Length: 312
Image (tube, rainbow, N blue to C red; front, side, top):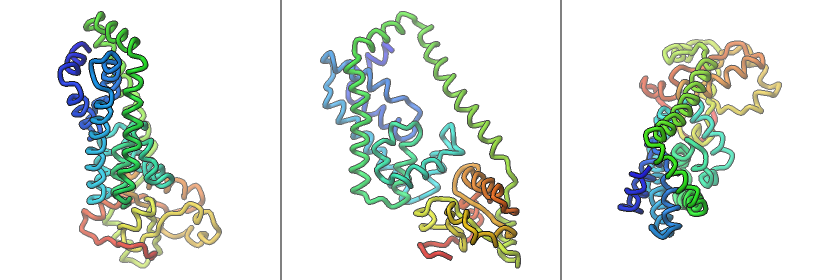
């Protein structure tokens, strides 16, 4: 901790800028402790609070705009890459799609306050073609609130921050072990949740080759895309229908109960597809299978994709 204070005193806003830029880019560096320490140093006049706020917001905007451009160019592939790096990759994409579908670009205002949501939300904004001006406006508001809160907490509780740092410093190696232990417990808890979720996701998948054979055969087949509508409209497996839960509750779907239903998504471990497949089976649909590999597996196998909003 003493070393951190010395670095902040020597490099000040530049260190905060670089630290936040890396953290927002996806590097697992906790930014809020740095912001709080920087805010406490600003409270005693060692650093400039307006400058700290400006460089922190700038770092957020640079990193977020990079994710936005990547999402616009590569779509779901970027989302999967980000979520594979998270401690909860199986539900990362599906949860982000759900929040973003409900709130749209406005979710960027609170995205940075939700662990693991910020990078995926900015990439989602690009993938769903949110207008650049709206993205920058909402992201600026969210970044300012996030940075301002961290610096304000350090400013308001500067005596407490100083006391905590002095206590950790007095503990020496024990203080570092205490911090390391807390981080280890947090990581272990998330890892256990990941393992538990994977156990719940055990379900036989239909392979890409098997789906191709079904499409060529005479068997009745219903191909269901469980992603959000903007992603379905952008690209999908030809002939697939967008999943609307309310439609599958109606009596008009009773004719599909004996059909072969293949459900796919574009997320790690086919998490969303498995959830929907289990729900459909509970509703009485007999032959429901999640597609192993999902949309990316279909693309990598060399099969064509359908674009546009026209329903099959």
